[in-house]
Amino acid sequence: MVPAAAVAVESQRPQLAVAAAFPVASDVRVAGDDRQTRFILDLDRKIDARAFVLGDPYRVVVDIPQVTFNLPAGSGTAGRGLIRAFRYGLVMPGGSRVVFDLSGPAKIEKSYVMEAANGQPARLVVELAAVERSAFRPSHPGDEPPQLRPAIVADVSGTAMETTGSAKTGKTVDPRPVVVIDPGHGGVDNGTQAATGESEKSLVLDFAKALRDRIEKSGKFRVVMTRDDDTFVPLGDRVKIARTNMAALFVSIHADALPKREGDAQGATIYTLSEKASDAEAEKLAEAENKADAIAGINLTEEPAEVADILIDLTQRETRTFSSRFAKMLATEMKTVARMHKHPLKSAGFKVLKAHDVPSVLVELGYVSNKDDLQHLVSESWRSRTVGSVAQAVDAFLGKRVVSASPSN
Image (tube, rainbow, N blue to C red):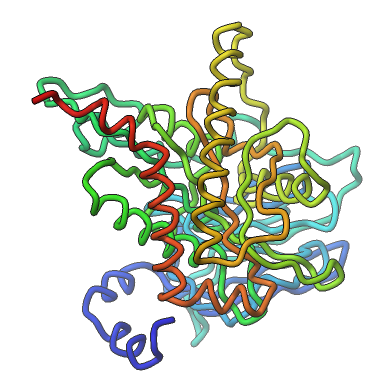
């Protein structure tokens, strides 16, 4: 954990002046009842805003320019009236989002931003009214918000490019295997939250960056991150990043939590893809992780299924075999430095593991709901040791490929 004095020094550094250029949200209030509810966000200047409603589950999404949220601790965890809870954060570079979880079907009666006046700050106001389930109308396809940022991937030369771009020509192909590291959640999606305030999205990003640095240090592999800042990346884009880069391995990093009524589980767990979950806990976790897009306010639609193809089916089976093999190697390495769950190897239907041609695992580093696990998750020495064990497993799994890809003397 970074000492408080270091944090104080860090906060005084000039680069944070960049954040001051963004509008600042300083306070938030929810008023009303289960028939009519008003959401008010105080801002230091007037901004543009666009609100729309989604169903299944019922949500209201408010898209605004990138904002620095300086809201009181715990804002959004409890709502009022039609707003059961709300979350906020960066959803793409230059854009922030606020998402309301509704207690039932509702419509947006008014959505507007007031100029600062009479000593009062500028305010974003969203007024909701309850409607009958039969009268609920989600946003029409033409009213959908702008598409989230295209997934950023790297071309074979290692230069960043958009997934929609064409490959650059005339550059030397990098023969090294690609490892995609996927820090879970991000932006408007905090993931699990510790009672003491630490969020999963920050803990796993710190771990993923340290793992990237350790793997790159060997020079054997090229690393691509699905995100390296506090930005939301949809689940489908994470899979596309792995496939577009023809990844040799995909490692998704998460941290779990259990409600107090469900006990006090602890230790790291490694998951692979399976249509049938290995146990009820794995199934419940996969369901929760698969809701990430809904949490960020994306209108969920079924993506078109892969064309039925025997070659795809065979590839998928082979990929799952490799995924299972890596999971076992990873568990063997991790147990030498980290506490493992009593059942460290599990499987379930995680969407983020569904690249049919990329061996993929999802690592739950521990439980933020467990005091000892949380102490490890915020410890730099624990992180360093555990990162080393994961890097060792990657090296053991992909080592032969590196040898075969090396030019002959």
